[in-house]
Every structure is written in C-alpha cells, then in structure tokens.
Image (tube, rainbow, N blue to C red; front, side, top):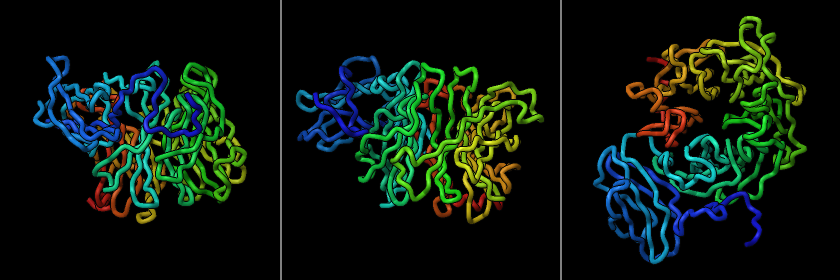
Length: 461
C-alpha cells in the first residue's frame, strides 16, 4: 500500500471493507423502476441481476455497455436487491424500495443498505453551488448513531437540477459546505461530528481536492467538545467573508453548543489558517434574555444562519430551544474575534430543525425555508416545508407551503435541512428528505432537489 495525499476519492475504499469490484455510486428508485449508476471499469459489457428482497434467486434482467441502467416493470412499494457483474468482477448487492418521492432525486440510500456503514446509513447535510462554468454541484454526508460519520458524496447536474451524476467523495468530511469565492470552489467541513474544522479548494470542479487544511482542532462525537456546524449561507461584510459554527457538543454540560462566527479578509488566502479569525464561543444564558428567563442554561442554540440586518448589522439567527422562537446574536463589526452579543428573541414558527435565511435584492425582503410548526402539541414534525418572508427579520409571514407531506405519518416523512439560493425568478433548494419507508423522519433516505418557480409572484397572491 502507498500513502495518499488527496482529500478526494473516486471512490473511498476503506481497508478490509468490501465496497465491491464495481462501485455503484448512485441509486434512484421510482414508482416501478430503479435507476442506478456505477463507475467505469473499462468492461466491454455489464450484466444486471435483480430479485425481490430475500425472495428466490437473482435473475439476469439485462445487459448494457453503458455505466447506468434502469430496472423496469417492478412493483410499487416493493423492496429489491440488485448488483452489476462483468466477468469475474461484481458490485456489492444494493437495496432499493420502489415508491413515491419529492422533487428530483440527487441520491438515495435504503436504510438497511450497508454500502457506507463505515460512515453511516442515512443521507444528510445537503449543500450546493452553481459553479462558474455553469453546472450545479451538490454534496451530502452519511450519518447514523454509533458510526464514524465522516464521508461526503459529491454529485453534478448539467441540466439545472433535473438529473444528477456522481463526481467524487471526500474522506474525512462531515457537515460539509461547498462555496464559491472569487471564482474558485471550496469545501468547508468538519472531519467528523465535533472533529476538526477543515477547508480545501478544488481546481477541477470537485473531481479532486488536495489534502485539507485544519483551521480548528476538535475532538469527536465521543468527546464533550469540538466543532459543530451545518451548511449555511456565507456573508461578505466589511471586507470579510463570514460563516457560522458552534463549539461544544450535546454531551457538554457547561456549554452545550456555544455560538461562534469565523471570518477571513476577502482578499486573503482562505487556505492559510492564520488568516482566519474566530469569535470566542458564546453560550446562551437566561440573563441575556429576561423576557425568557425561564429557559435553562445551555438551551439549544445551533445551526445559525448569518444575515445582514436592514441597519447593516451582521446577525447570527439560530435554531433555539424555545418553541416557536429563534435566537438572534450580533457580531462586532470592528473586532472579528469579539464574542457575539445577545440581540433579541424573535417569534419564528419554523424553527425546530435547521433553517436558512437569505436577502433578496429585488424585493428588498428576507426569505427563509423552514419546517413550519403547525401543531404545537407535536413540535418534532418536519413534514411541512414552508417559504416565509420578512421585511425586518423580526416579523415573518407565510408565503407558501412548498413541500407538504402532512398526509403521511409525522414520524415517517420529512423534507428538512433546506439549503437554498435565488436563481433569477426562481428559488432552488436541496433538502434532506425522508419518504418511502425511511428509518424515521429524522433518518433520511434521500437528498432531493426542488425549484420554486417565480417565487416573487407568490407575494402577490
């Protein structure tokens, strides 16, 4: 074995783990068919085998010279096993369930498919960018309790999100966020849950990333401190590039998760750690907010979305532990290392999972995609994703319910953790989606792409 000096793989093949001679890199089940793709193995022809899960022998269902295939005429809401073979080379047996989904599917992972068990069983942390060359790139990671949680998959679309294809994967990489700075593609992530904060830059459209630079050292999920973050918008402010993060862990009894922001002069090299400044971690204390003094120390305050207020203050608006509210911190515009200070608590009916806020230059309004709380007797629901609007970041109105799965059991369906952007007259977004017999509403089996056409027209309805 030889050493390896890149962050990227195609694919990552951990020692002593059978990922297959032929690597199936993308799976998309439909109502009565399964589409899947694999990495080119220079074979002249491939054979496709399939069967209903745990029923009978595998049956040859087709041959192809391509590196993708559609198994058709399957049964709705039925589970299947399948693999690809060429000569004596064979892929892992993969799983999929035919059924309904939402949007266009970037990728799918059956909750009992162990293809990525060395990282996790469920798909999470969607982010995307529009590359300067015109195509879309999407990233997602793999998680589950008791697993390392350290692999990220990257896909590309050349038709504005209608279809997607595998590009590469990053290891170790978790909670990753793709972004463009001065025309170049970067990934900002953690090495694992509560691990190191990492950054790298790709010069070939995410096919390869050099070994990442560590900006902060963490521990890991088993520890009680480290870096926590989610893919969020990044903000240019006062000549600096800002992003949000937290410090601590769910097990940390002193801080829980303490809010932070990181920034770098927009003209400095992002790959030099000393160019970055970090605010000192700010934990929530009830004395900050006398209007909610009943809240305990270390209430949930995570997954902050940076945004500039109407009076040009840099705010970090956070998912918060008080039902129907969000927590707002303000950054010091003159000192990029100063602790965030408490600004206010706002009424926000879309909070009990990650949300994202962006400012629209056309309407001069703020928009968010969030899981709307429609049942205060059950605040864990994530099956109603809602577009909301505000003039002042304080008062929010519903514009439209964009993905509504309330007809399904709340703990079996979700469209959550949206990452969105404005594109002309539309909003495009990725979501962590649980449908079609996911493990639970939280443990999602899809990353899906969606488009809200002519979203500004919805304000007139």
